[in-house]
Each structure stands twice: as C-alpha cells, then as structure tokens.
Image (cartoon, rainbow, N blue to C red):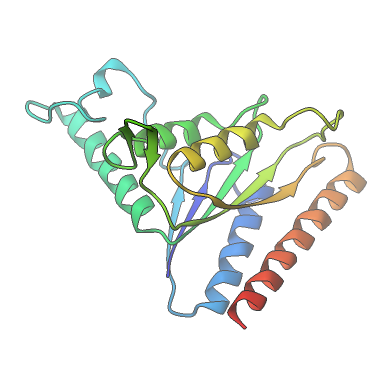
Length: 207
C-alpha cells in the first residue's frame, strides 16, 4: 500500500489538521505494516502559483525551459508521480477565508492535467485517477451557522477529487477550533470519533 499524506496548514506544530492526518496515517500503517508513506508538506514546499511563466510546465512544449521552469517541471512531475502511485491519500484541508489554502490549490493545479489525471471525451471529462481512497481532514475555526450553508473548502476538494475519478472519499471534521476551549475540545472529540469509526469500518471490511 502506498499512502500519500498532504499537509497544507501554515500553523506548524499548532495545526490540528496536521495532528489528525498524522494520526490517521499512523493507524493505516499499524494495520498495513508494509505500507510506504510519503509526506508532502505544502507549507514548507509550497509550489509556485500559476502564472504565464509556468505554462510550459503544465502541458506546454518542454524545449528551451529556463532554470526556474525546469525546477518547477521536476517538482510537478514528482507531485504527479506521488499522486498517481498512491492507493490512499490523507489530505489536511483547513478552511482559510471560506476556501482551501492557496498552497493546496497550487498543488491541485499541478496534478490536474488533461491527459495525465483526466481526459476529455465525447461524453465529457473522465477522471483517470480511479481506485484510490481519500480521507480528508476538514478543520475550521468556526462552525456552520446554517445547516443549509456549504463548507466551501470541503466542496472544493470533493469536486476536484471526483473530477479526477476518485469516489471513495471520507471526511473527518474538526470544527469550532477558534470558538473557545470547550468548542475546540468538542471539535477534536468529534474528529477522533470519526477516525475511530473509519477504523472500525476498515476492520469490518477486512474481516
């Protein structure tokens, strides 16, 4: 089993999403001792954001690249190889200003490539990253005030994953983290309960 852990929080050791992704990966490894784990820290290794200078890196001609473009091309190919090789992805997705962290968006922009991870067909786009399992750790400082309101960071990552052909998606939620000690602990308790439920489901599936 190949496990890819993606962390995007800028909070370092104070990050809840990072602590939860690490916990989930540790549980996966405990159940699959031969698993190979790749950790991609998008805060420490933030990919450059899209710009005209990066167009050759993302599907354009590869001749005559300058040193910056060549380095970004190599980084992009590494991201793509890690993504396609992964059987399970554990992705930390904190909510920043209603959406996902910009460094996570930059990673998505590297791996969402026509002909590599999806393709256009007569019947519409088709994802090529099928057969993967993804566990998303959703963290946010507040909580949803209206049950009909969407958490846009979750909507974004779910839409991207499904576009790329991934349908086995679980979400672990740690919300209310900035609303005081009681709300924070309640959010963490909920997240831990959801992780335990995932583990129970995995054990039942393996039985």
